[in-house]
Image (cartoon, rainbow, N blue to C red; front, side, top):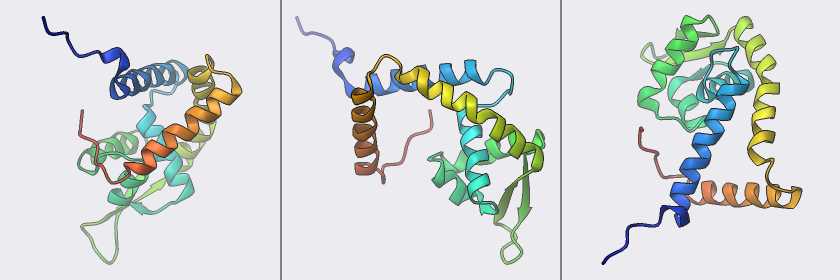
Length: 150
């Protein structure tokens, strides 16, 4: 009899499960803000580089460009992001974080930090550093691979 696929030993499955856990922890820590990890990343990216266009912003936060408009739309509806057509190319939309969005993003830094600490809490300091190095190596090696929309 043929055995089934052993997901417990599959790196992709373990990474997916870790991502699910990370999102769940973030949602617990950020419960009072009504914000997702991707929205948090967008706000922080706009603090660092205000006036980015939507396509560049999506690439910066490693999010599907085709659906980034809905994420930006939700942030815009909350009054946290302002969208404006580019003066040279009206089809291109530039984005800025609003003062209210900046306050939320900066307040949420602690929730983001708590999420990270909780996620890696089972690891000792050396294991945390090793995990970071290995994940960074995987991401760098596969940087050109586009993530499917799930």
